[in-house]
Image (cartoon, rainbow, N blue to C red; front, side):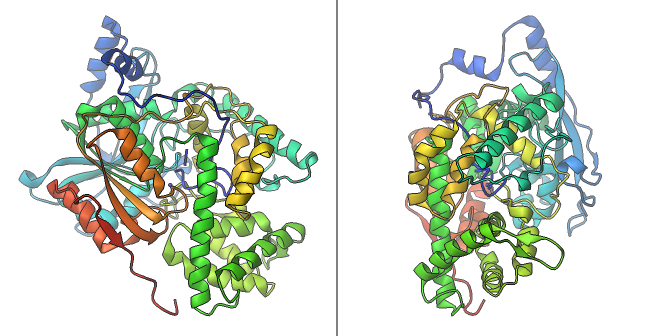
Length: 549
């Protein structure tokens, strides 16, 4: 599902086939929860669970992120001198067999800066994806959450299959580079066959290189890991901040462990009622709306792309088609083609403060200069036409050595039971083109991502029903391209009566808290720090970009 992973590539956001069956939103019975949690009830399993819950974490100074986590330097101390600590959590490889093989999850934390008697507990973060390394990401974003550290230890982790938590690898010397594959085939023959072949060969390579862990990297098992972590950290309740895909993970946790939910915030909310194709179609409309908002802003700034939003959108579509036919060479020997154009636009729509750079890049392309747009795409992690993470909250540590894309594919395909065919995609292309002629084709063809995947997916969409759970604060952004605003209301409905509490941000970009909007941050902080929920119908308005920027 989609931040949902802020698109791992411009076209790699959804996957799979629409099944006629759907999951009920009803709360599971105790027996069903035991089955989903994997508690088999045997003496051996019971003893294994006791041992896991009694383990002690060996916190040490953090090393530099590994290549699987994206590389980079060891995290620097926080301004007050607090140093980051890292550890590993032992967890079952398969929660249905807790006495079987185990795996280690990579953890990171910064201790609370406040007085000991003011400390609430740990605040666990998931920044989206799926596939992003929380260990590599949290230090770079920690300044945004410094106020929360006055009462919480800030904690994050690499979910199973990600980074240093038995990271999935699909590398195979015989595979072509993904950038060499046309992600929006329109010839009905060789290009389509090449995309199908690439996805199937990638699935086979994943099974070859990571077959031992592939069946166990889904969101349900990751949620079970979080409850184990809660217990080992010594918290009675799980206090949680999930962004984009992290909202799906948080919803699944609430479904499985409603009695263990503490103060939880879900920002950039995934629509839990959508299957993979529906999610991709919603995103097509979301990105189209966001680009139209950018185009209207650009026109007001007097940019050279057109007199109004419609002109700018039409020009960009023409540019994409032209660059597909004749890529624009760049001084470093590269080129900007249609996929690279869409990738740069996609990345820039995740944050409104990227808009001025996007304007400059598009104006340069119309002047036959692709270097600016290429630099923008590379800076945003979209080099070669790729999109960013599902929520694009990852920082500059992510590079080509990271296993983020492989983990995204593995978790997405383990979660989604849908398996689409070329015929399925072609039958829905008109809907995608209507939603967005610019972004629709790529998102439609991304439905083939799980073709040939060796593990059956769990369900068409996640189960998040959690009647009786404490309130969960849901932050929806009206201009969100990756997790459209409607998802927050649907998450609230599925969580159950009086569980989901909505906060609306009338702004742009993916998510809301990291936009810097004071109203959003103060409202979220008031809940996490003091337990004060916003009044029903609370709306925070964005401040416009300064004129001339």
